[in-house]
Length: 201
Image (tube, rainbow, N blue to C red; front, side, top):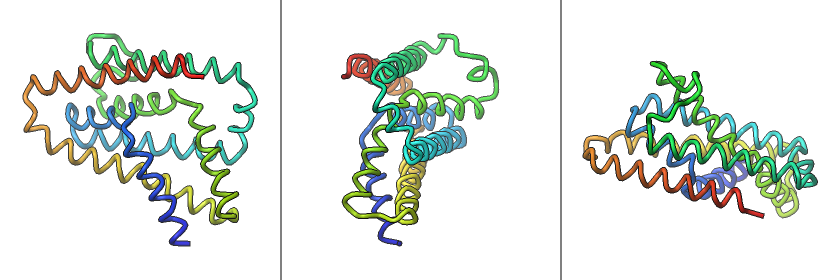
């Protein structure tokens, strides 16, 4: 059982180390708002990932896979959300919904990370493929599949929390110019992700 958990943990770590918009959001949050806000963002990401894996196990992924029109609409929504976060990163004055604004910076981080993670509901299809492969290749029982999924989810929290701690410590080394360059890079990356999401097939 331990080997099954470690297998899920290993796969999850590999997936998390491929830099994506959520990874960069946690990095930026740790640098600009501190470790507490960043850990709340990590918690939100972990919970959404767990929900996506659960939905894949319940068969929602198969249903989405058989509905190309719905997939197309979800891609449009995902691209729109990514573009919005890109603009908000580069132009902080861009207005956000009320629950992202105000003085509640902690709630802000949790909600923003949740929305950014939710912005790609087709992740359910990805997890469906991963879990189906494990069922076929490893001939997992339901219990072993559950333990494997726990390993994947744990990897999300471990990798992103580690990133948050390291980045919060690096804040003192970043000059205002470097921080602005980082924001520009993140904004550009999110725009690229939005473009790829919009025109993916």
